[in-house]
Length: 298
Image (cartoon, rainbow, N blue to C red; front, side, top):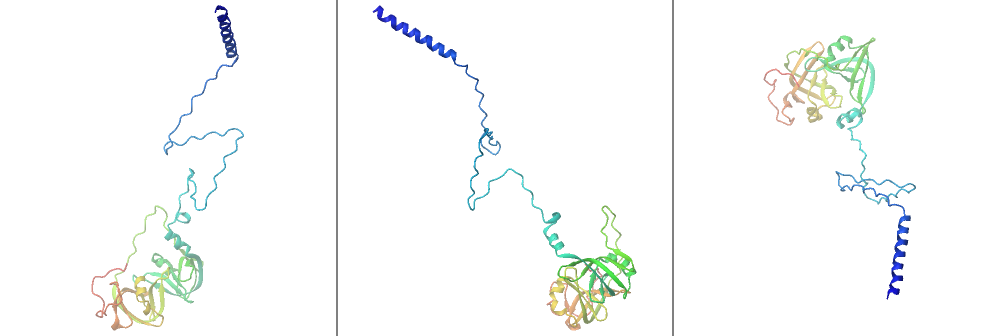
């Protein structure tokens, strides 16, 4: 029994010696770096991007299916603007509907408003020009009917009334300049008292605004009858050159001419109808000026 156990112990000792030698020949284990923190996949904590390995090919992009929505991007998108220069759509459309224009001709007459100020003119060839009434004093002192004038400004692309930016006569020019930033506004212009008036006769010329809305007529005796554009749309059938028109309202007579703001209109003195109540189809009212305090047309 003793001879049998000795070889067994010797074999075990030899195996342990060989194992320890192999372990000593292996390099020491390197320290393992700590694992990268794991973020929750929410909008508040974005997913960490893995760095590409050297020589690795980029992953192929998935093919877009017809009708599929584009993948969201983190790049900022430009904010939409309302047309060029950031103008509102309504103002942009109005600016695009006008173009620069100029005209030259002989001044036939001034067009005046019910306050007695010139706010337009007619040339001998029938061209109608409009300008703001605050230029009335300068322009009427600059030119007289029968003189040749040059006008430049803006006109609707479809033609019509020329809105004057500047008027030149004999080398002198009057321009409509916007007020300087921070400038004190000018004092209100003195207006004469309006008087009750009536007028009648055949229409020589239908007058319009720069937008093409009918807002008055010129009668054969030179009287100008004005009314709001919505009234011009209501009674459009009466406003034809050569047709008779009678009016009552409030206005002025001055060296520049006679003009009134109509409160009642009709094809004859017995067919006058109230046009300030919102309807031109009302029964004929009593003749004569409408009583009441004097007022200035809006």
